[in-house]
Length: 157
Figure 1 (cartoon, rainbow, N blue to C red):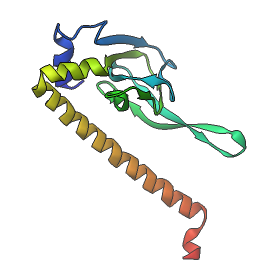
Figure 2: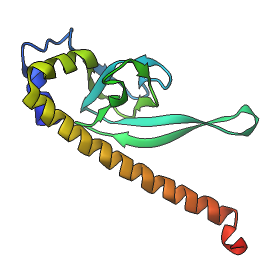
Figure 3: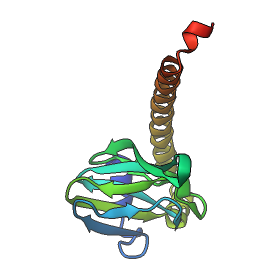
């Protein structure tokens, strides 16, 4: 977990049970389900999780596609940090562990009072999101190349 969040969670002003919650999980537990409504951010304290989504195929069949695996200190659910939104993926435990769930509006109110910590947190979050976007772009490029090869597009060029 990044140092800024450790500092926030250790502050008695940011109360466990009100501003954040600790959740133990076991293998196969679903922490977040795609489509559910949320307004929280999660940080993995220990353990590993898999992020996946549903892919619709022909004839009303669906495939559960894994996007990535998360480990200790990784953050997820950040799309629901500033407003109540639908979750964009399902997050399932692939090992036993523990995650911290942080209430978005509580965290934002805390950062209003502690702007230096807010700046440091959002600076780190920006780096995380940039890395995820770069990784997603790379996966998309590989899938596109695979699709072109699978349909023998080079022969038609």
